[in-house]
Length: 103
Image 1 (cartoon, rainbow, N blue to C red):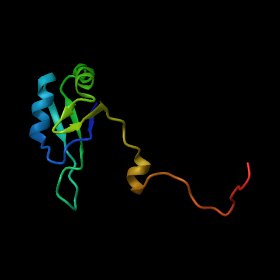
Image 2 (image 1 turned 180 degrees about the horizontal axis):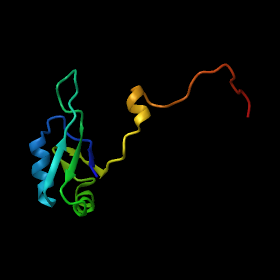
Image 3 (image 1 turned 180 degrees about the vertical axis):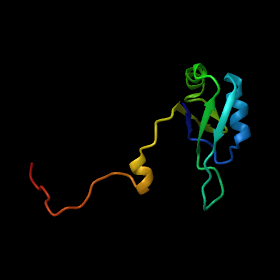
């Protein structure tokens, strides 16, 4: 399972993340999404550890920790909703002609 790392500095690199997470075990993969328009990291990443038993230790140690001037958010990544990924949009309210005005 992947670990989600959010609220990252836009200057962070894969090597920076590997260095920090390697303190808690061996890192097998780092995914650092890049913004297509700016060419800079989008402020979040996904990290995979070789042993799942290390995940809880990493999350407990790093969630809320300040790093590169930002307070990191570290938790288990949730599976992506395939419907959202395919449509590229978030679910939400729609229009419709009926509108309730009194409760």
